[in-house]
Every structure is written in C-alpha cells, then in structure tokens.
Image (cartoon, rainbow, N blue to C red):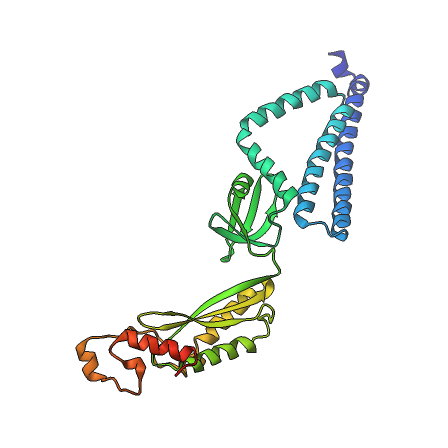
Length: 302
C-alpha cells in the first residue's frame, strides 16, 4: 500500500517493465520493417535473375513466416519471457494446430511439389478436372484460378497434384480445329479455295506448321470441311474468333445457298416441287450417288 501512495517507488517499480515493453515493441516493429525490406530486395533479385514467379511468391511467403516467428521470439525474450518455455509452449501449440489441420498437410506437401516440379506456373491457362482458368497464385495450401467469365476458383493443392493437369500455355503455340459446313448444292472446290484464302490472309496464323483444309464428313444436311491451323498462345483466342466469324459470313454464303444447314427433305412432295436435274448431282434423289459425286469433285476428278 505504501508503494501505491509513493509515486517515486511506483515509478521505480513500473519503469523496468515499461522499458522492457517499449523495447520489445520496438524490436517487433523494426524487425517487421526490416523483414519486409529484405523480402522486397529478395523479390527484386529473383525477378532480375528470371526466377519463376510461382517460386518467388512461395519462397517470399515462407521467408516471411519464418522471419516473423524469429522476430516474435526476440521480442518475447526482450520482454523477459523465458524463451525456452516459450519455445515449448509454441511447440505444443504447433502440435495442436497440426493435429487440427492434419487434413491440410497433403495440400502443403502438394504445394511444395508443385513449386519444385512446376507443372503449372502463374500466367498459364490450365484445366484441372474440368475447371479451367488462368493461374493467378500458387501458395502453400491453395491454387487460385481466374476463369473466362472473371470468376475466381480456389482449388486445394492436393486436388491439383492428384488430378490431371492440362496446360494450354506451356508450349509456344496451339492448334485450332474448326468445322465449317456448306450445303450439298455448293461448289466444293470453290469452297475449299475460299477457306484457304481466308486462312492465308490472317497474319496471326503460323506458316509452320502449315495450315490444312480438307473434306471431313458428309452429313445428312451439310458437307463439312476441317480447317486446322496453328497460332501462338497470345493470338489463339483472337485467331479462333476471327477464323470462325469470317468462315461463316458472306464469303461462305457465296458458295452455298444452304449455308444455314437446313435439313434436306426426301419426301415425295419435296421431290415433285424441286425435281432433280441431270446436270446437278447434288439434287439426285439417291443421297449415296450425291455423296459419291461430292467426293469425286473434292478430289478433282470429273
């Protein structure tokens, strides 16, 4: 009680603890600031060394966690806490947290494997079990994707590692397969020539490997051409839209008045209204004869 009434004794009693608390607080603040500066320097050095962005994020995160643990231990030591007992307490807490989060340990191990073997990287378009998107981040437990509609998808690393990964962005170029259908009344040689001109006119289509335009199938309502071209990953989406739109616009309507793929009726009423002519093998009532004529025309034979 005498200490409480005597401010000098109270100050002398409180001052050592206050100094320790202020020193511990300064150690924590300065240590955190120094740790962030070191992480920034390490990040810049790894970027200049052309280290993979996925590895950079993972290593900086691990260094930050370990560094903060050391800063906290140093602050507690300066505060007067026995670090040996504190380490034992932290060890017990770590064991308890590990038992409660034991389901996340496979994700952590999978995250380490993803960083080491790098089947996917930040900025690559991938597909994992039917979930496709652009890789935004790979941390210790989760992989974050952004889908085409700007939706964010978070997948545990254990599912990523155990699933089938289709990486669309690892190779420098991709193949584009299109199916263009025209009517049976069309001039197939002219249609093929127009498709080849459309392909050659696009600068984004690679010359090597060369593009290919070939007859694919004879369906009930259309003759299908297969258009196979190659483009760089950066141009693939635009090239896809460009080829598909141009192949289905007025250029192809010039060679087919049945471009809309309307089904051809074989009823007797339709035959009486549109009688076949000998000069037009495409209107022959026997579809098999028409298809054979179609194949002869596509191969250049009369």
